[in-house]
Length: 154
Image (cartoon, rainbow, N blue to C red; front, side):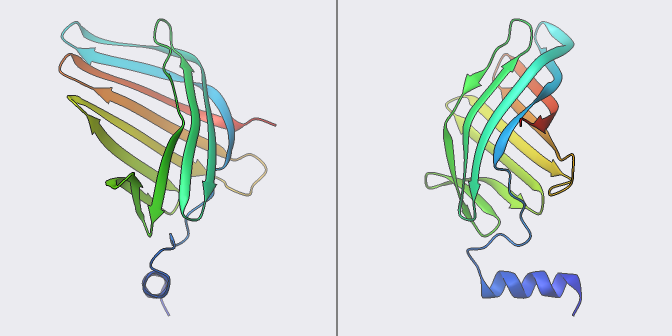
């Protein structure tokens, strides 16, 4: 049986399961970059530290905390609970994204503001896994994106 048929069979047999999804659980820390674009132009700069704490089980993922130090920008939020139904991700009853293989993608809106939060886990189970993190905020004034590659905190 080919891999696609195997994944389809698993999805049909276990519709609540996320086929081949990784486990994002952990305390992650690293550096990155912030990019701002809007009415005042575009600019980029370093993020000295990005820190994320995540709890992940088969049917739920909770971002316990997200913190970043990017010059004058210092986002600090959480907890944000997400329910996982198959490969779909929900915040409350609103579908906000997907979890497929090693990639979590979410996009939500609150009033006139859109929030994107994406994670990609690389090398799970290996000696040096990394977590690529993307957090973006867009409103009428512009867009701010914080990206980084994080390592597990021992």
